[in-house]
Image 1 (cartoon, rainbow, N blue to C red):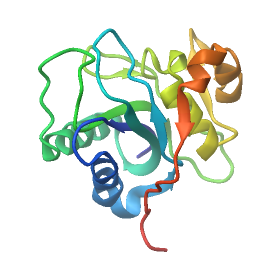
Image 2: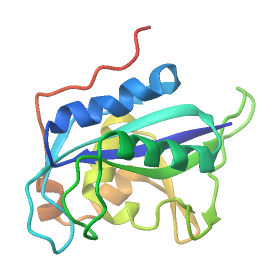
Image 3: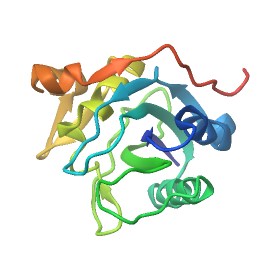
Length: 178
């Protein structure tokens, strides 16, 4: 089984409810949920701002995480009409690590599969992924070009304008009851 970092976003309909759908559906598999951020859209298509967050969950294999992500998007009636277009829900598998016991170090799973590239090939460029992830896990790291790099370093390497486009909001997502 693996531990996955999932980036979730919505800019259509009840954006917060779409994000909460993910947390609720993952239930007891959720380890942590980042604060919610409002972010400018990424890409060339004019559209409304997104709400974004990061969820860390455990209990499935990488391909299962992708299937869950697609199922959640379908539950939110996502339509894939335009690349980088507006969406009710976007769930991306950013990174997966092998679950390990207390005596071993977790290793990131790397995949160049056409359907599931791990880590996500553009995650290191996207403030809307990195900023919430760093808020949730200050020790987070991501493999970029074959080298494990701290997410804090990746965030620091983004332009000030990109970082400024990711604004924390007062809305919160409710994780599973303890």
